[in-house]
Structure formats: C-alpha cells, structure tokens
Amino acid sequence: KDQNMHSDLEEGIRRLVLCSGKVVYYELDEERKKNKGSDVAICRVEQLCPFPYDLVQRELKRYPSAEVVWCQEEPMNMGAYSYIAPRLFTAMKSVDRGSIDDIKYVGRPPSAATATGFLMVHVKEQTELVHKALQPEPILFP
Image 1: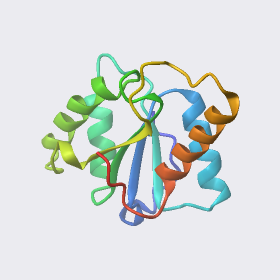
Image 2: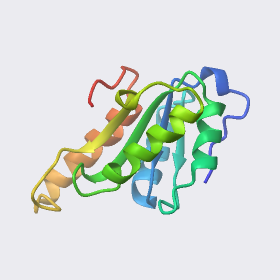
Image 3: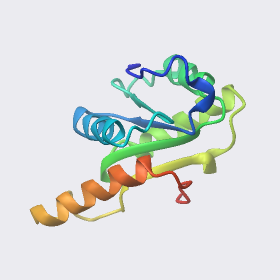
C-alpha cells in the first residue's frame, strides 16, 4: 500500500524501505517525521501472498536510484525476509534494477528464539533497527 507523501521528490529519494506489519511501519514513519527525513520512502507491503509484483514494481520505478531495503522486526530466519527476497529480486529484475545483493536487510539477526525475553534488549534492538533503516549511510549487509 502506497502511503508516501513524496510525489514531488521521487528523484531525491535515496532509500526505499519496504516492510510489512503496522508496528515497524509506524515506528519507521514516526522516526522519519521526527528527523525530517524526506529522502526515505517507506512502503508497507500489506499482502505477502500472492506477492504484489505490480505494486512493488511501481514503487521501484517511482524511485529509480533508491537503495532497496527490506525491514522487519522479526529475526532474519523467522520473518518474511526469506520469502520476500527472491520475489523482490524478481520484481527488481523486471525493471532492470540490480542483483539480489542489492536488496538490503534491516532487522534482527538470525536467532533460535522468537524473542529475546528481556524487554530492555527488545526495545534496544527495535530502536537500532529503526535507526539503521533510516540512517544516511548505505547499508552494507547483506
């Protein structure tokens, strides 16, 4: 679902952050507004299956020079990333946008547990992933 207010800034967008779920979307949006980050577009993918190729391709075309980021709050091996990455790559290929290595991941690292079990650790990790998704520096992993 397109919830960006960037129709006049498409060329100035340096990063397209794709995510799913309302918690991470609203945290990203709140942080972007707080920091006046008008060079980051956030797009919430509300339907994962079947994958909305047409909508994702539209966003990729809309921001042609933006770094593509998938952001999730779950660990890398538990959230939607492993399902999304190959489909996002297919969408990128169809609009001549890079390789699978150009899809950057922001979220918790792979884990055997679904949660840390400690509220302070959870809050710290959540804050770090929101900051990383919006940071001005390029994301290097993966």
